[in-house]
Image (cartoon, rainbow over all chains, first blue to last red; front, side, top):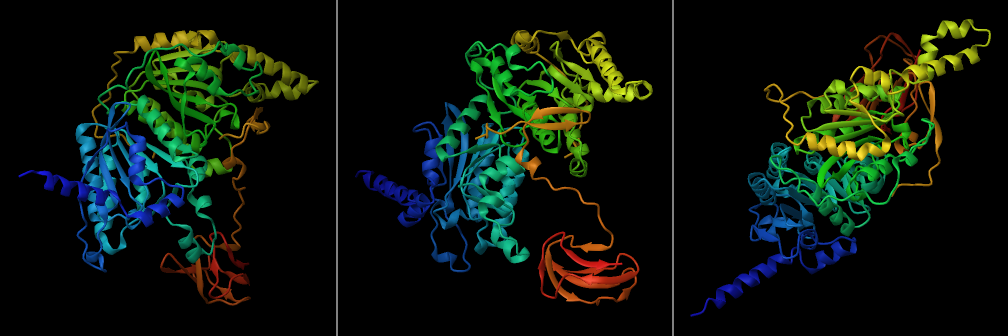
Length: 514
Length: 106
């Protein structure tokens, strides 16, 4: 008696379920320019590494004719696999099966793989493509979402959590990605919103397209909900794979080290920076001149572009970079850029990634809209995040470091471990013009030629304060360095901080200005 | 992705002018308007279900001017102070957005 019969039966069962919603539904999915859930998982993971769990799960709903419906896998595929050899847990909602709607068993599959990821301390990647709650399952569906959100929160800061939005992700569902560390979107495919265009139209009479309301570009550029924007699903998967190389599997480990490489090319940093501090440059060119292989992996490139965040490697080790961007809005801190930087700093701190801060900023953005948008509490997030962080914290002041911004950008006073400044650094309460106007108000007003006197006093103030030496004389700056010594000094600082220990008083948790 | 042809503009921060680019969000930000206490604007989008006051009518602070249904609730719109209805800009059944001028008073 052979077992063949049983084996063939298993194969047949597998094959049937693996078809998801069937040919017609798959055709529809493809027509929308989307890959199927299974294709996505296979494209993302290392070849032959995917192992599926819960293939044969079925829903138990009995109302509204659901008892007659068989939903393969209950609309979601879960399992484990590897990305460049790194183990990951993954789930992918299958839009071809009842629109990827979330019912009780669908949610149970997701929470099962989440629990698994947390227990095994490996990253979790969730691919979202779902019409939302399975209305026929009522409160069971809502319960499912709640269980997912709870696990997102508990796992936060323990394992990396990545959300990939490859279809609609609307209503309550969208709070799961919002709770995760990195959200990936694809142009024309990702749709995220709390209330969709139809509801907005019926309730408010306002018309807006899905794309303009919650498309990839909107979230990448305006809301900041997305961290990555891609033009195709393939590009999106490449971005995810690259991210995985930069981050550790969990909060008890360090990211994998790569063979050290020098920066590409022979760009002299000196040549990147214009001599007039009022003229801009692209700070990413400075980062590329510093990091291994000039490979800088930028995060939230389009959102609040006045601050640049992302990963690079120094001597093969992952480093988080935070840099003011003089090219956009003169590199000011505002509500969005503060929010963006603060969250990234906390990410790096949670996952043992040293932080290098490159500073060139004229201060906080003045304006009624900023004040009313809460620039005080958003700006405070940056102070909080830097002060709280215990990973190695290194700052290089390139040019301007004015006022509250100087303090906020990982200053010595927030307990930075290393403070470097270029000779072009200007560390002052405000720019020379403003300062001279206030300090020498009387002299300027009473002079025969006030404008000439003003210029004179501005120059006087510049010479006296608009340099790094006043701060260096107080020990607020450890070392004034030549721009082209920057990489060398940073490598030294990182070497010295390998065994850094910095402890905080015991507490349940702080209360950051969320 | 990024529009590299974007022009550099003068951007004033306190006393200094910097050459820099602007973000789309910055360019699209709304200008601040000083609130006019004589203009009653909707704080929530909804539908006008009943208008209780008439043009020229004198009302006391707290009197109901109209009813606005929003988010499944009937909201009473009150007189903010004693005064006269100068003009009513909405009709019964009209659907209005947030910040829509509903009533002018004096």
